[in-house]
Image (cartoon, rainbow, N blue to C red; front, side, top):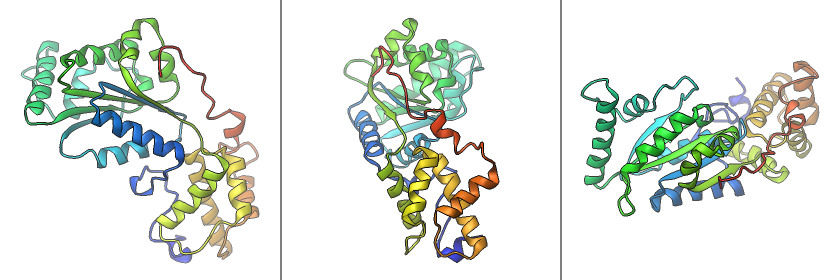
Length: 288
């Protein structure tokens, strides 16, 4: 709709995670480096948390894309509280067919796959997204499954990704053994004011922009209204481009964005970011 008007090759603020659009803020670069370090050093468990819309999934997509042939990768992205056992989900994620549907057959099929991949010079990496939805018994299943590793040979690595509630779950006394195995740990916080400005400019350049479409006052307003949460930034900026296009404006200034929020109503999901205190997470004992 507005792409040709602004000279863009693609939508710069689409809500779907796109590793091509990854903005390496200081903290996002740190998180990515730590995750890559965890893979290289054979960490059994790694943990990445962040508030809703903080950019976790975009980081994951980048990590998956660059995992390399030495990693057999399984991704569980639809975890929920109704998981009865993690084993069938792992089998599906890794495209493994057990001999039958019994727990023993499923467990043996998983272990056989880990060992077989290791014999080929590959490690199995399991990524569980939205892991805050998993009940404690399922998380404990993951710990028990990781017992296939030895001090010398790591055949299974697990990356848990989720919202801050995941840290609260991992702080439970009955999950202490799992928490102690987490050797790589990072929490994504909202972008700073400077990073918010840079994020918007980066997304526009990555989409093909050759000029500064968002004026400085608009960038500041974006930060004020989104508290630096990437998903909220994308929502506001995308609609800002729609409104700018409708008005025939070659640049987006603060009044355009004010009109976006005014039309959406005074109480809006975007404006609730600051009120909700997004980005503030209390440290949890036993994790990190």
